[in-house]
Image (cartoon, rainbow, N blue to C red; front, top):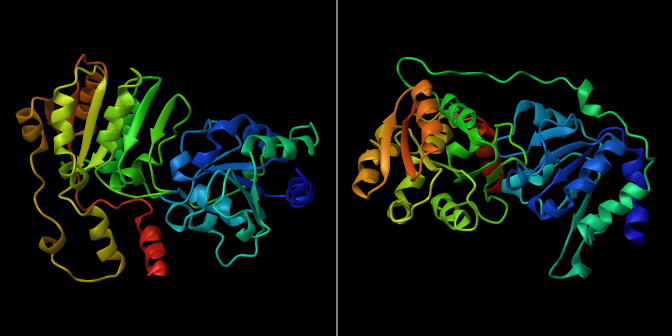
Length: 358
């Protein structure tokens, strides 16, 4: 624990610390919460760790950076110390915590490393729970109020369904409102993920998303089916239409599996939503036919494979269908027809990040 004693001063002296939680800290959440209460730190998660903490807590700062809200970005921008636990800080998932180019001390705690001798001084390899327990023991037992309560940020631009087309954010919120408690949500790395990551999830409604070690479409449904064989928790799978094209064989598996309370919701927006967003960001005049096409009628495909399926076009109908589907005694598929030109939250930041990597 010597490195912890040596590194504790920065955390003790910080006025605006954040604890950046990755999936590797899943068994150390109580220690994270206690350390936040004793230091006033904001609890921010990577996308893969979304829902590990109770986001109704006053110390909760949201998810960063893929799909981050303006509030979370303001929290990270205002931090004067970052304690990163259980995350390797990959650029795609965290953009190094959004701290590139800023002189903010970052201390990282990870469970293992291929070669500890090559690690920099700001990385500690130790049991995360024990390391955090060491930090807690060095703090006063008195609880500090979260520093983020005095923070201000630009409000989000809110867009809703119009002209007979369902806005994807309205669709995702309708799914969220239909969720029972507890429930498990599985999501692909598509534009759907950027909407789902903005939901106020917590330990009772857990999200399964994988960005830190890979970022691939077409994996959510297979992973959800495997997860459901282990438990009978109601399950929601949210995929984009391009991702759905990679999961048709899994639909057949689902048709052969009597799983009650298993809902697959496909966000159909003629495919390539992120590509269209990137084209807009670059201000390139490219015909939509180059990067979009008519989405397959997935409900018809699902029915052909033996899955109960339907198509919805309004948030009200979606809420009713999702609520019924999550309580049905068999798997249900919903094809959600959404506005193909709707803005994607955070897509601009994602494009900028990928541009820096190229």
